[in-house]
Image (cartoon, helix red, strand yellow):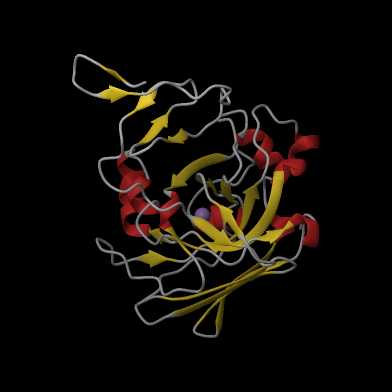
Length: 271
Ligand code: MN
């Protein structure tokens, strides 16, 4: 029986036998009201507006990969680190993030973002985490990967450059709307773990970026293990693993077509 609290809100009680420690609210439908509970049984108020639709990436075989967080590795190919004016001498990997809803899926067009006149393409292999964990050992890391995709880490290079110069965060240079076009998620069950193979990007049919996954400074297992010592990884987390050399500006109307050998493709038009 709901009790009336001093603030006037009616609150239910947690359903018997509910799971404790899960990540999501527990729903219990009564005659007229949908009650939401936290995993520890504390009643939550109703959403004051509709909750956002979950972000998901279509899977090659059907179904969808639900996205939780999007991590990105900086400077993971020596030749790209050099072109950006850094020493690629195996400094520890560093990470930045994009919001999950910055992803562009299904080959949709990518709107040219505001506040930049230097939008750059960065073609990348994307790792999809299927099993979470913290302090993952390098030897166990690949068992946490569900699949891979080809993706683009679009970058407002002018804003990123300004932020670097001033020692400010990269967020607005990297994590803007539509900054992460991504192809189909392909399960490890089908393709295994690509450690080498061509990674390339064409713009309007002309080759702009071309390298090999073997040129990554930090391998996928090393990256997963390293990141899991900074945050507890969770199912649905993505890791953009860095771009090879050849990054350059794109304009409205440009067609971007990328490929990671053994994984798949990404195709989007900037509009
Ligand atoms: Mn990148």
